Image 1 (cartoon, rainbow, N blue to C red):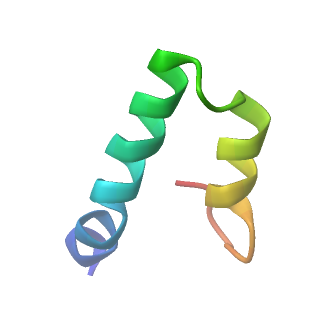
Image 2 (cartoon, helix red, strand yellow):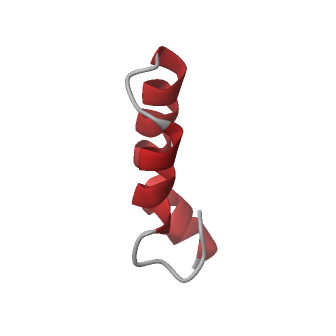
Length: 42
């Protein structure tokens, strides 16, 4: 089950990590995406 969650969010994590690295997204905006409607922040 945990690997399923990782698989679902892996592409998004890479995408947002790239945005952060390039400076095209703010850290707070990215964190809000991953913590919104979630019982456990990933």
